[in-house]
Image (cartoon, rainbow, N blue to C red; front, side, top):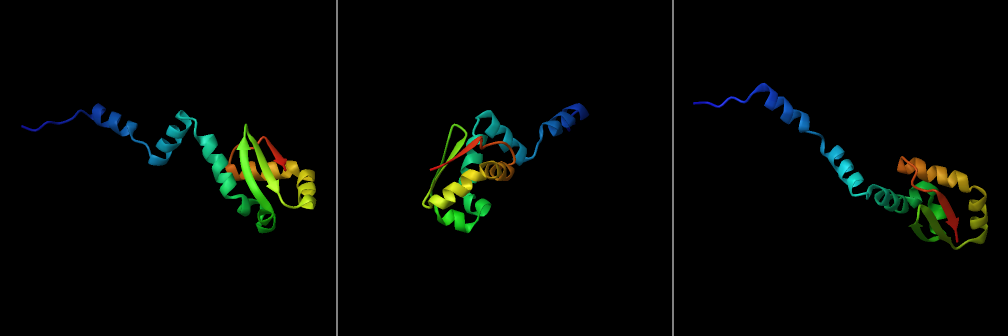
Length: 107
């Protein structure tokens, strides 16, 4: 004797199937770790985003309350980056794909 599943039961199971990428995104949003992951990725990609000369003069990068703190070894570079702060914020948020950086503080 064979057991045949109803078409509705098969369709329902197929509707519950989703790609693993979407599942991981939903999981990260549920546990609210997607923002932190974006922050970590921005810190890791600092050299790619800003370029090697700026990355070489950067001592430390860290996030706190949506603000990126950047400790630099060059006072002229610090002044130059302060003058173009909005452009830096825009570059970082474009790289992240959403608004992660609200402000950048150059130390």
